[in-house]
Structures are given as C-alpha cells and as structure tokens.
Image (cartoon, rainbow, N blue to C red):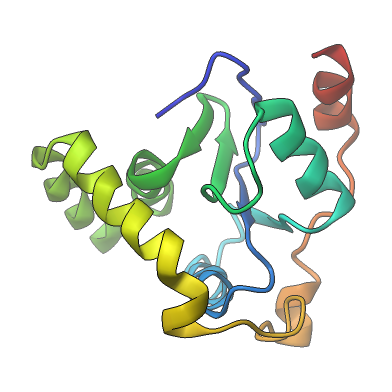
Length: 150
C-alpha cells in the first residue's frame, strides 16, 4: 500500500522496529540475502526513523516501511516490493498476491499486534552483527528535504 504522503528514495530503505526480535531477525535475513547491498536500513527508533513515521502520520509500531523510487510501501505490499527488488527466487513470493490485500494485511496486523508477546524484545538492534549495523542509515540529505517539505 502506498500513501498520499509519499516519500521516495532512489535506493530502497527498509525501516523496521529495532527492538522487535521478529523485525530485527527479518532485517538480518534481508541483509544476509541482499549481498549486493541494494537495500539500506533504518531503525524506527532512530531519529531518521521517527521523523519518517511522523511524516507518514503512522505510529512506529503500525508497520515497517519500505521507501523506494515508487514511493512508500507498508505491510504485505512492502514485502512484495522487496521481493521484486531482491529478485531471483524471492520473486516466487509474489504468487501470494493472489490473496486479497485485506486478508493479507489482517494476518500482518495480527502478527504485528502480538509480535512482542510471541517473539520478544531485544536491545535496540541487538540482534544485528557489527557488519550489519554499518548498513543502518542515520541520515539522508535528500530524504530530510522531503521530510521538511511535508
């Protein structure tokens, strides 16, 4: 799902909950399998992450965000966009687009609502290796201009 308060970024940026074990492991997985480094990352709790969520008018815990040249993607639509970006075998995941978005996003919301209880919390980005922490974006001049323009 894209939003009317679109933010765009030439290089994809995956903004995730840095204290959620499930979310951090997901970011870890993407980093390990995106060896070309196409996707960059920001924790929702970082200054940049908080500013993005504020601009989008979303609570930090509502969804991860994926910003790319096509706009801002949330929930299951973001995963499909990510599969497209990563390419290869990950594109097989696009078959799940046959499931209507309301059903996909209902499942996403159910997991998101219970993620701390089911998977736990960790120290801020504590599940990322040092080399993965280097892939976290703390600031972005072009994105900051968009944030200020809104």
